[in-house]
Amino acid sequence: MSEKQRRNIAPVSRYWNLGMLMSLSGRRGIFPFYHLASDHHLPHIRHIYNYRDINGFESDLENLLKYYEPLSMSEYLNMENRPRGKRFMVLSFDDGLAECYHPVVPILQSKGVPALFLLNNRFIDNRGLFFRYKASLLINRVTEDRKAMERAAEFLIIPEEQVVRALLMVNYRQQSLLDALAPVVELDFQRYLEEKPVYLTGAQVEEMMGMGFEIGSHSDDHADFSMLEHREIIDRVTGSLKDLKERFGEDVTPYFSFPFTTHGLSSMVVHELLDNGHSGALLGTAGLKITGRKDYIQRIPMEALDMPAMDTLKAEYLYYILKKPLGKNRI
Image (tube, rainbow, N blue to C red; front, top):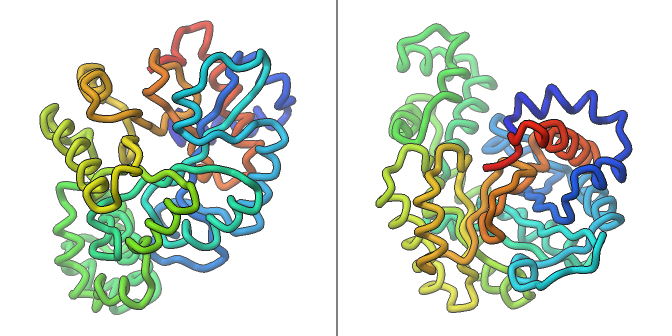
């Protein structure tokens, strides 16, 4: 489900009973995912997507645990038939952000919830920055400083009122534009990373693995895979998983979450990666969907609409049910 579709169906779904929607859907498991939880103002994220404050994240977990048994991804993949009616959830986090180590991990530990953390290889230890986070930092800069806005508009050769929209439209192939603009508006991405670490460190990753949390890949640099050819997709998935294993050992799980979306991803790519043992599971972000494979999983974005978990789930279940007679709930 797209963000626009979520926004359209959310007001209607609030009036439905969640238990009834669960039963009508026939779905026993869900795969919710987040990026982080924080009470702080985060300029590198705030213009790109929503995130929960700590109380909101804890409330989400408490409500989810009323309905679902938490499983690790490995437990889900290895489980046999479960008792009829027994519901489960597998929680994951994308991007490998610093807030996963604290406050997220302590909260998960306190509630006994396993989770899968999916990392961008090149950004571990704050060695680089996702291009969309660069865009958010630039937007933050130009909206807070009039002269920076003027310089950005002049550099981009567009009216000032179009600068923010233009920055949001920069794609993976165009990210060098963001690097070129940064010094023009007196923004230093590396200095920002040094003063406010964005990502997990290698030591934190190792500690989280020691606590029993699973680690997988979210690609090396958060590429947009819709722009890549078949062979490059295979190479990037296998390469990122191999790199993590070489760095953190064989306990790294062979699970890969595609950045952005799996929309347009060919079935040939999916089957080649899974059937040839390149990956143990592939994860997308399309919400409640039937994929035809246990190891090809579509997850629910829990931050997309900036509303409590139960309201997000109602929207997902209702959309799934409405699409079911049309056969439109299948990837």
